Length: 172
Length: 243
Image (tube, rainbow over all chains, first blue to last red):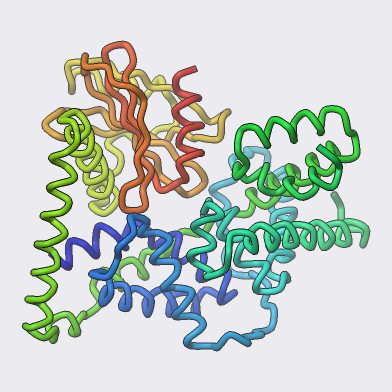
């Protein structure tokens, strides 16, 4: 029974956990460690899962594992994502258009990575994991009103970063 | 609505977090105010740019490592604790039973069906058997079912709506042979289970174990869509299918 519960609740959300961990850790190796540790914890505590939302619960554990390891004042230097990129999700057949699209998405990715951690995580949970404000509030442990204002400020900041990027002469 | 109000609800609006009345008020304001409309368009462009960033799924070796990690601590649980847990479980099951008994039989049947849909989806995701026919072409996927099941499931390509068709498989859900048509939204998998069913019920949405499930009937067929995307997106998917 516990094994089944674990497989059914946690395993389907590994992609979400890894993606979120990558944005927290900002490199693949740490993200993998983080997800492994978080999975062990999830295994131990899966019996305490009360809410129906296993994904938000697992993401909360990922987040707690991260902060337990590195502390709240974690200010790891911004590392650009330079690992192998995933071209699949961009269905453009034209190679040149693909390169341009990829450069644009690289710029966005780097701008998100450059956001302050508090802003980055609400943005990532909203845009990449489609979490509702309520779910984000539960994962991050802040009131819904704070989710809303942080998200707004994160987007303002991101828009500024990308605008500054564009005026520096990058092709658009 | 003033421009200050509009600025305040801009983000909740694009996130689908506003009530219908407030969303209407915002839309009306934006129609008459070019400044706020510009802000809205900027936000929407930003969202499109963000969502073009590739979503990286967990690498296979991580998946394997998590699935096969040793888990010694489970076994050291004190027997007393285990008994306490059993007792608690008994009490809550009793309570759940009482609640269930109070509901109509139809609701209970719908819940059983929803659970079966979740199980079938998880089975497919974990068992590495998501697709019998991998294809993004509806004219390949639809005929593939011919001769394998005794009905012709509708297969629609929804890539224009952001739901890419990736293929289909045969599945078995709650005693029905079902056609499973598989879509992808970014890296999220959506299973659409279809089987013949004349008992037409109202469209319903449920949230189970972190998955959104939406069920409806049409043309003598029962449709059950399930995914780990949010309920609002799944509703958009159902809406696109029923257009």
